Amino acid sequence: MNTLPLFFDLQDKTVLIIGGGEVAMRKASLLERAGARLVVLAEAFNDDVAALGERHTLVQKSYEAADLSRFGALAFIIVATDNHALNVRIHQDAKALGVAVNVVDTPDLCDFIFPAIVDRSPVVIGVSSNGKAPVLARLIRAKIESSLPSGIGALAKKAGEFRAVVKDKLPTINERRHFWERVFGKALNDTKVAALPDELNDFIANDNTKTGEVYIVGAGAGDPDLLTFKALRLMQQADVVLYDALVSDEILDLCRRDSDKIFVGKKRSNHSKSQDEINALLVELAKQGKRVLRLKGGDPFVFGRGGEEMLACQKAGVPYQVVSGITSALAASSYAGIPLTQRGVATSVRFLTGCYQTNEAFDGLKSAYQPDETLVFYMGLHALDKIVASLLSSGLPSDTPIAIVANASLPTQQVLKGTLDDIVAKRHASDISAPAIIIVGKVVDLHQT
Image (cartoon, rainbow, N blue to C red; front, side, top):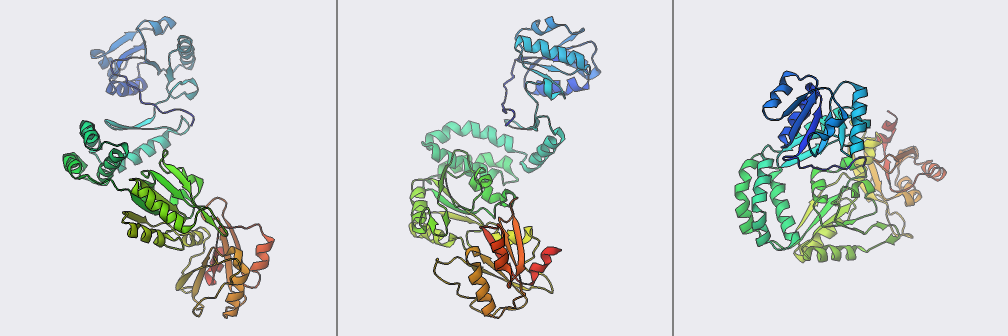
């Protein structure tokens, strides 16, 4: 973080603006909206700046160092002239007095910067690129503007009026946090948010829920951009996060910053906690009134044991939600350019697991393989030789294309392509490692194109 974002109360504080043109006027308009008292100093003023004289102080003269001390304590100084040498001198004079200064469009001469602002007062959002890409910051602001309901500011004001009432009815911090997240969560998905504040009394009257909840959430294959909006929302409101070994650091960083993070990852022959222990922990934490996020790589219901965790919550009477994630087979195929189905090539796809106990052999396809079928194996890299042998014994030709996609969707993704005849040797000669998806079928040849 290059700069620390802060929100500055300027009500009735004095800001000196040096410059009398269009740029000075833009800054003056912004500062005036924030309640600042303005002193504008310049040799000449354009018509818009001159009109400020009805409400603020205009001083028409050339700049002198003594001007920085003439108007009492200054919150800060804005320099908006087109004379670079003068700008440098004013910056040096301000620094000597210990007053913060911003020289417009000159990051090297700025103690602070103006962000692109989304104003839904009292909700205010600032977006900054630290002067590196101001156009990008403005585009991000526009994107945020378009996603916020127009009445969100009115809701924030109403919430301020209700805070004391909510605190009286809901005595604990967790109860209050859960309450407000339900109110605001609904508001952010309601196009008629302006009507919502009137419902706050009903929310308070009917809000007796003290039981926690479990969120069983698929985090996708690894790339944070593959998260769903719902997954991200629940990640940012959970009190406790139980995450597995396939959840990347980048995704974990998107969880609520002050949430408790508990690693419960399972790798072959190395389980930090058994599935029964994880189930019990989910129930125990939820019964303490906490919102518990079970964050799983891929999709919870595709070889993810999400069904077992769901049933444990049902049995214990704990509320739960399940959020799908992009399963690694889909991410691996798309990021590797291998469509799992393709007209004229493959009309069906079968998902299988290669994760068996150490001494247990892969036990086959269960049903006959069709030439227009794609097979996808999860967690099978350690048993590649057994999988290949089983497929060959099931009648698949030795020249059947096969690909291994490791670290799917991440910058470290690797793709190793071969046939059933040579893939084992190629794998041993490579540095490819788990986690990996194995894709078998004619569609693998499309990887080249």
